[in-house]
Length: 306
Length: 246
Image 1 (cartoon, rainbow over the protein chains, first blue to last red):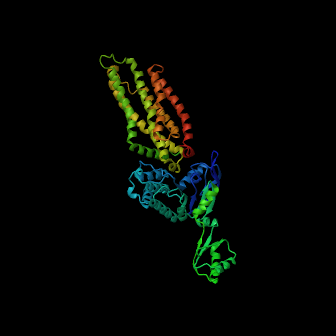
Image 2: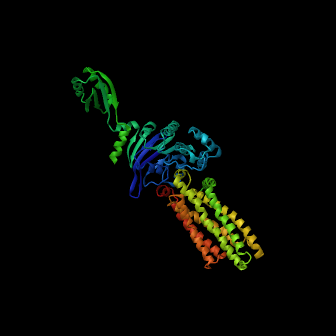
Image 3: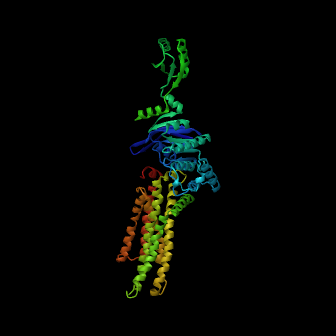
């Protein structure tokens, strides 16, 4: 659905996006993470045919970005929620959506149906005749999402849709994205919010001008290799430590009757470890597996680049 | 270019303008002032004991007065063009608009139509009042109805639309640099100067605002319009707007 290969954007001497290669399948929610200035917005703008690419290729559906005739077709397929909502404050919520519906050439009946559908879904139908300028930030953001969806696009680009929203509004927006996910919409989500990305996205890309990592949230967590098993025992004895040494495991540390063992594949290695402890007379109280969080992975990758 | 898309953009801007009372008042005030002021000047100059205005001086005097409507046409659209382009730039509403299947040309044309029509309607409406009042106050002296005439037709139907286009094009170019509506308005307001120079030139006898010269002035505006059209088109481009307009 969205494919980029070596996509690059330079502004003079400044490289904003460097050889970006990624693929987002139909119906996937793709989270694009990265610090400010990482090139996330530039990427979205290139993919939406708002700015030109310097080199590389990218396709939305079967249309190529950068080709004038394809750009209009791409813009029909997509919806964009930019980082600034950019509503017309002196038009009502209904008029804002109606204007965009007309630009997408929807007939009057379809416009009316879609406007009602999305305003009701987002809890704004009662406010349809209120000027958008009087709306709260959260309401404006919801209206901007409705605007991006008015023509029922196949792909939705969202640039930090929950940034600067209060927790309740952010949750409403996130829940709405999850509803769209159920409807199998393809969503390209720029976000700073790691928890949001982890909860919503099927696939995550970490960008810092270059693409630092790409995969499912679980794959990214595993990719850092920092996986460990923590075993809480009633009491650690020399006999237990000796029996574990015989298993030739990785780094073992012990503290307060708690053993921490670094492992490559804890789910396969844990049974043998527990067996050895029990045979050595140990009483196992709990076994937990830890790996790097997405946050740790993100920070490690971003700092590495810096 | 899809004219219906441009008209959708224009309709949206016209709806916003209708709700901005300050813009509406500024559109009406200047041409209305002209249509009341000049007949008043004639009445004042013709009052008993002043000797009145020489009859053969009337045509050039009235042409000079009528030329003020061209000045109005050069100044008034800047208020709307600044509001509809810089306003959108400030409110960041251009990006979602640019993400629709609408071309740069359609958006620019739509915004230009919205900036073009209201001043034109205001000027035309006030010029009717102006013609009626001038005819009323000059008839006793001239013995015939002076308006409508060819000179005013040239002004209304050629010079005024061309001056409006010039004003809109300059506003588009100014919009790429202006950071707020007021600054764009001020830049656009500079349009007043060349037309005022022409008017002063006519008052001090450097130029006569007869039909021929009005056509020549219109032709010059037309040439400048063409040049600015290409400059404006180069300025109003998606990438320029999103990455270079500050």
